[in-house]
Length: 108
Length: 120
Image (cartoon, rainbow over all chains, first blue to last red; front, side, top):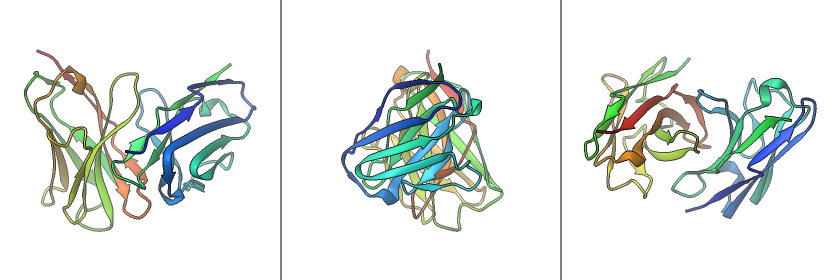
């Protein structure tokens, strides 16, 4: 099983700042199968990025994904108030599908 | 626009079987390349993949739950279902159904989730 480790666990930032979220895999993951989601309290996760760097239609361009192999990054430029949430990475390059433990982006 | 809606009992007794159904509207589960998926999330914790049924009917389960899980589909009702047997308090969670893309395996459509509590 591929373990995804997200860091930091919590990121305290102010609106307008940049958030850099890390997702590290215990073994190499095809970029094709690395996904990022955003989850707000009481809501289902929302798809942001697939294939490591492909932004879903309707997601603002301040969200970007990058990385390959075992190291992937989600960057949020110029945080907006609605961006404060929990972010999860997910892989299915290898079964079972696994999620990272999440990074909470909170208002400083 | 495809929408998913979970339904089922909110309370299940220990050792019994948890049964949930996901009703799909706005599209057919028979067509396309999709993984119809169940995911759960204990309160305050992260997401756990339970398993999926592919459009073709093939299934794949999380090894940690495989001995207790069955996912099936009823194409006549455009629904897919989750059965989880021998439940314990550790199975208390919000259960989500979702549609997984067959090429990139991202989950682009989610139900709102349903809370299931295991308690006597």
